[in-house]
Length: 102
Image (cartoon, rainbow, N blue to C red):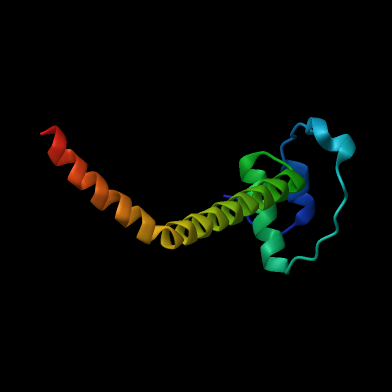
C-alpha cells in the first residue's frame, strides 16, 4: 500500500501510461485540491499504474456519465407519468381485445 508522505517518492514510483490520441486537442486545466484529496489521487494513480491526469480524466468522465444517466431516468419518469392516463386507457382497451381471441 502506498502512503502519501513524499510526493517525490510517489512520482518516482509512478508507472508510465500512454497518452490518449486526443491529447493534441486536449485543454489544460488547473485544479486546486485539498491536500487530502490530492494525496488520495496520487496514491490511486500509483496503485492503478496511471498518471494523475488520466485518473482525473476518468473520474470526470464517469461522473458525467452518471449525470447523463440520472437525467435520462428523470426524463423517462416524467414521460411515464405524463402518459400514464393514456397508457392505462390503451391497456384497458387491449384487455377487452384479448377476450375476442380466446
